[in-house]
Each structure stands twice: as C-alpha cells, then as structure tokens.
Image (tube, rainbow, N blue to C red; front, side, top):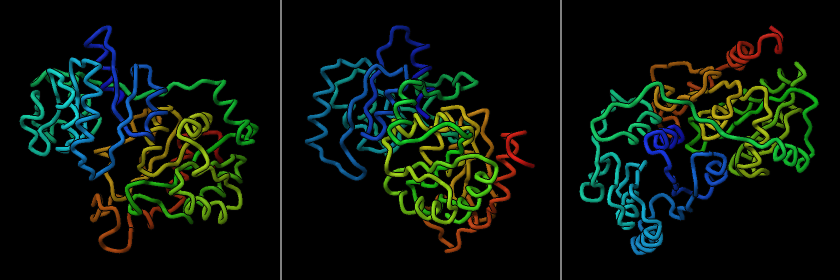
Length: 324
C-alpha cells in the first residue's frame, strides 16, 4: 500500500534515489518494486524500544545523507531512527505526539483520507497540499524465468487453471474465513477443473492442512515458500480467494482476479487496490469491530459467509470459466 507513495515521490522529484527501511519479510516484495533503489533491514519488532540500538542504526543510516525521511507508522518509536539519521526533513503524521521528532508533522484528517493508501500517498505532497487523484494501483513486477524456476522447485505445473487461496491473516482469527468454507470452495474449483494452491506463512500451516484434508484436493504451500516464491506462483493464478491480509494486497498488486473476504475489518480502510477485485462482506451490525478475536464469541461475520456467496463472486470474475 506504500508503493503509490513511492511512485508519486518519483513524479515529484525526477532522479530521486528512494530507500526503504523495512522488516525482513517485506524485502522480497520491495525487490520487485522498480521505484525502490535500496532496502535497509529494520530489525526491530513491535514493542521493542532498544533506544541505544536504534541510535546505532540511525547513525549508520546517516551515512546515506538522506534529504528527507518519510515515516509511515504513527508510533513514537518509529520516529526515533529518522531523528538519529540527522535528515533535515522528517515527514509524518503527528501520531503519538511526535512533536520535535518530526519537523514536517502533519495533522491527519481521517474523513478526508479514510483509506490507509491515501494517508501514505498524502505524505508525498507538501504540507497542506491535497493529494493528486486518482491514486495509481500498486504493481509488482515478475520474471517469467523466476516463475519457471519456482514451478520446477515445487514440482508444480500449469496444465490446469489455478486458484490461489490465502486462508491466513496475521492479525487474528476474526479475519480468517473458516477452514470448512475454504474446503467446500476448493471442492467446487476442483470439480470445475481448476487446481487449488494454498499460500501463507508457517503460522498458516495448520489451517491449510485442515483445508487440504477436508477438500481432498488443495496443494498446501503454506510455510514452504518464501515470499518471493509465493509471489512467483500467485502470479500464475487465474483467480485468488483471500482474507483481508498481506497476501491479499499482493494478489491485488499482481492484478489477478481477486475475491477479498472481510469479517472484523473494513474494506473502506484497507480495500484491495485493484480493478479486478470483488469484495465479499456481510455488513453485520457488529462489524467491523477491528478486533483480533470476536468479542461476542461467534465470529458470525465469517461463519455465516457461506461458500455459495464467495463462489458467486468468483463466477462473476471468471465468466465462461466457472460453471454457472
């Protein structure tokens, strides 16, 4: 969701050299964004202050002599390293009262900028300047040679059309469609002659094993691929079915037909940024609650989202391919 910001910065500053400071897991994604000249590893996890370590990292980054540092998270900690770099312009939203840490601090108007991508994108502009619309959709570049190598590494083929299922959601169970629903959908795709590949991290292995066992057909790749390999293989898919997750946004950036499933979260805040996406949500009175686990104990927003509803959305994206 930050890539449109990167693109806008290049538009505003021809000849820009853009660096990104990011966690380990995002580095393969950044490597496929042509706007990014270099990625620097962010070794700090959530909740870790480690002030002296942040100082050392900031002073190391200072050797790059950045003209501007743009801070996307709103936490106090995230503004420390930009300060330590000595950059003359440090831009971001005020967030956790970051006066002094940011010298180009912006007030966030959530009504004017309801989506996360809009908030990131706005930081490319000068203070008090409106964003330029329409915001371009993210796009990930893929090498055909890399895809062929990844197919060979996992013994997979493209003999049949492919459906990519992403059953995980790092945030919590209130964003995960039930395994039995994914399995029923997988059986429908298999009956239509479409192979089902399951994507996710090692944390998603258990739910993916359940889906594979219940469906009797899906190929479980969760925890077996790196993100770079997952991107290669997802780029071969004819359709993706995803919870609101990081891989959903990857699927959107790959511009493949996508059905995005929303339970506790809101498509108004983090929608799939693609013209080929269909959102499925029940719009219950209790959602979106933005909780990791259902506070009412039933997770009706996903339990009552029947596979038939998602199948109809998929049919609309693949007319003539899926039986009506």
